[in-house]
Image (cartoon, rainbow, N blue to C red):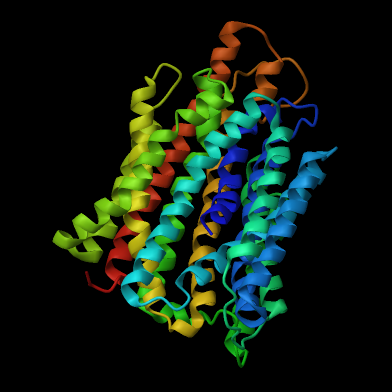
Amino acid sequence: MCLCVTLVIGMVSAVNLAIPDLSADPLRPSAEGVVWVVDGYVVMFACLLVPAGALADRRGRKGILLCGLAVFTLGAMVCAAAPHITVLIAGRMISGVGAAAVLPTTLALLVEGLPEPARRKAVAVWASMTGLAAVLGNVGGGAAIEYGSWRTLFVCLIPLALCALLLVAAVAPVAARRPGPAAPLAGALLTAGFLALLYAIVSGPQSGWGAPEVLAACTAAVGFLAAWARHELRAREPLLDPRLFARPAVRAGVAGMATLFAGMFGLFYLNGQYLQYAKGYGPLEAGVRLLPMAAALLAGPRLGLLVERRCGRRGTVLLGMLVLASGLCVVSAADASTPYSLYALGAALTALGCGTASPLLSHALMSALPAAKAGTGSALQSLARELGSAVGIAVTGTITTAAFMARLPARLPGDGRPTTVAEATSRTSAPAAHEAVVDAFTAGLHTSTLSLAAAIALVALAVARWLPPGR
């Protein structure tokens, strides 16, 4: 189960390290296209998690897990051979569909039939792996890109995914099936709504926030999401009843995890670019230099248990979220001359905060739902994590691109304003101009990380208020 989690979560962060290599590739994607290469996977992953969890409860968790791994592998094959940026994004979306079937079934199979103490430990291990996998993806992805290209990343993924499929077929238990709705319409409405929302967020800086296509996307997002809520409220057996959010533990768990992962994956989107563009490291060097985040993620749950004994659940979650926000504030001060140690401190604090708070939020959410809803409950918290990641990546990319374009030198060779660092640096060989391009990127990093930190601090106060007290 941990191998499956590592593959589907690690492919979010691993692709972030490939952004500089992909941006300089003959495919020449725009900043908007680069964000969609990352977020196309995440948004399909996120929006289909709840339908996949319900389908697994109904049709059998092991079978759905095997199907998910097969689709995930197919998407990797499409990406590896993609002749155009549109095909690459399509391949990423196919993999995202498969990942949606993988993640909720892993947790549901882990907690199947376990007593409460063992169940809590299993949830903590699974929650820690979802964070740790992101950092492991950086190292593995960095190695693949260092000795090949961004295509090598997907080529190396294929045998690993096939190995996971064979292991699941051999050792995963067969869980009892439970009746429940598959609700394809609800899944389609939710997916369409968030695709439209992310399209608006990502397209805004380049097309203009008042552009007809951006306004149309915003209107479509509101319409689809409203239709989804109406459908679920009227359904006899809703896939994801919006009334669940009236439960304080569910509301706190969803809001808290979405916010934590928005901060974490917003930083992951920037890590590879900063370490390669501003510090001059290769992909593997950049991946290795993110290992302090892995150590912090491993230490986070243990720290959370110690703090919980003194401060209770509420105090521990609040502390974890504020530590994550403080880590982003440290990162915001980074530029080309910043020592690596300072940047590593900020990245480690971000990971430590996430590792401290997320297991407690996961357990609070799962405990608020009956055992018969384990598949749907695990899918709900996975939905919160991945939607938070998708929104964090989209918002970070949007703010960074807008600030980058605003700070670029007024005159660069070529037509139009470049939207990526690779495009801007390819237009000039002058050292001063190159330095100005990097400074424009770090200005975008400064603005986006401070914005994320402020939003996380505000949500942390609300989560602490909603979270039921307990130890």
